Image (cartoon, rainbow, N blue to C red; front, side, top):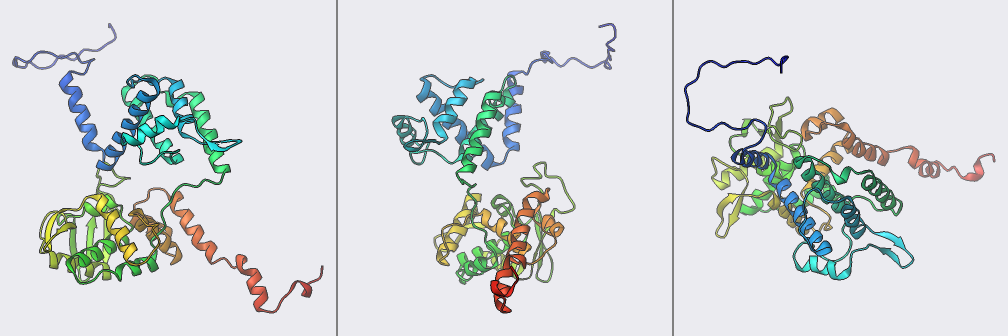
Length: 375
């Protein structure tokens, strides 16, 4: 302790409060930390974490007849993986989940249907358990070499079978126009038209970003022009003001937004609200309602049942690529911090216009045949 410099505080009056141990969190402090962590997470993330941990607890109890406790043994994580991941057998694809256990999970409301879940679902549940171990400190079985190797080989096996990530179809310009055509002059039609155009034209907003729009962060800035200040997003959890925080809502999208505001009579709070019987304006829409509106309008338009709320975002990016919008401008609108995600959309759009891929068609148009060339 000889080298440790001690700083003596100025004289302070007594408070009558007992001294805490600086090396240990007091119970009330621990509760406050947990509350802050929970408040800082998005509601969707909290729900998905809770569901994943409930599933882990239910599966663990059914498999081992004891409550789950951290750290979870490495062998239990390996068992979880082989119970849920399919592998090739002489009889076809199979996993190690006993049917009676699988049915119990369904009946308990922990699964929607029997059978192996999607690879993405298994990986998400694994990620949530890893996060729980990280927050607790100490050993993390998800990082164990045996578990990492099993996950890596499982990914490769699924890829070899041609299993692709489940991506929703993109709402590009044509399906968007078809969906907008279903929005009549009713109050609900005016709201849905404003919501769809707001989400799509401002850069492909996520559903929580749509429901976060309020009269405080969305303002009219000119004829047929609004600006939405997007502070909190998936890539900006701290809510920092950035150069690209202002998202423009222009032309038809601005007209639709103005029409909804005028018809609804709203002047404060959330912009997009529920509509109750008798055209009564209700509480703010929940993020899940954005998905429901997208799916309902797609169904009315006679479109395939392959669209979800994220289809607005992927559709905006895809359409930007098709119309040769510069990558940097697209990123500024969407809020992507990495070009890697967007490049795939841009390359797909370029391939659709590829002259090389149409050489056979071009050859036929000018009368060339294999016989007209030397061999």
